[in-house]
Amino acid sequence: MAWIFLVIASFGEIFGVLSINLYLQKRSLARLSLIVITFTFGFVFLSLAMREIPMGTAYAIWTGLGAAGAVLMGILFFKEEANWKRLLFLSFIIGGAVGLKLFS
Image (cartoon, rainbow, N blue to C red; front, side, top):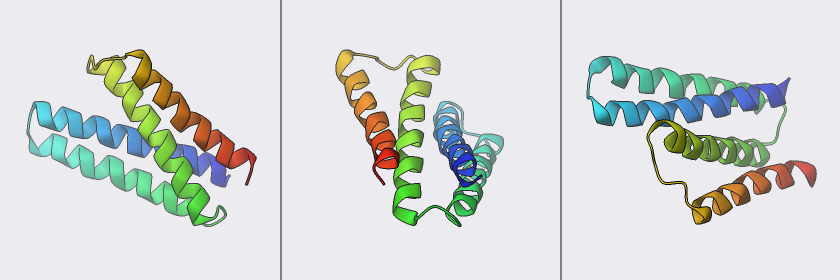
């Protein structure tokens, strides 16, 4: 169950970054509140996951999935550039997170 909590926490990170992007487009109290809510949601589930998963592993997976998801959200929804270098390094982040789980 802890691994499911960790994936859910990563979605909190992804949607938190998405909320920041939305807030920068149009600054409003509602969008600022969305940032606080999504990051709080992510931290709560990260805390639940860390009851069973060691902190170093949980944090690495959480940040890796969050970073990769945020990059993909930027490419898909905010028309950010998706060149081969960016996608290569994105695959390194994902591969590092997967490798950490496989070899720990």
